Length: 130
Image 1 (cartoon, rainbow, N blue to C red):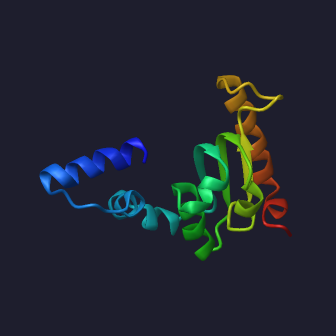
Image 2 (image 1 turned 180 degrees about the vertical axis):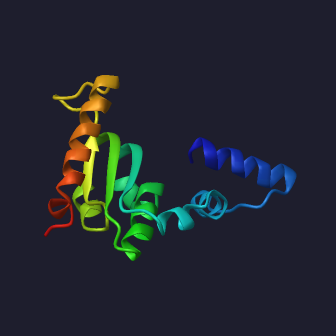
């Protein structure tokens, strides 16, 4: 269990707090659905995108919501691991890690990856597989 689950469990056990999905809570209170309706592109991120992301982490849920509206999704991540191929078939069109042999994970790496991402967006047909 992660820190969020441990804190929530303690609040539930000792203070009678309600347990709710963090993603659902954020979606309900952030205006995400309204913003998504106006979007041409969604950019999401995660520290490490890998097979654990397939188990309902935020970036996958964001991609699922965007896919319903046929909006492309790109992810900027710290690093990637096993399982990212499946994510590419579930609504995340491109994944850009900032910690690779080519990128060290520092500010300049983030800027470089952002430029690559925007270049891909400008060539939208390649993102959408057209």
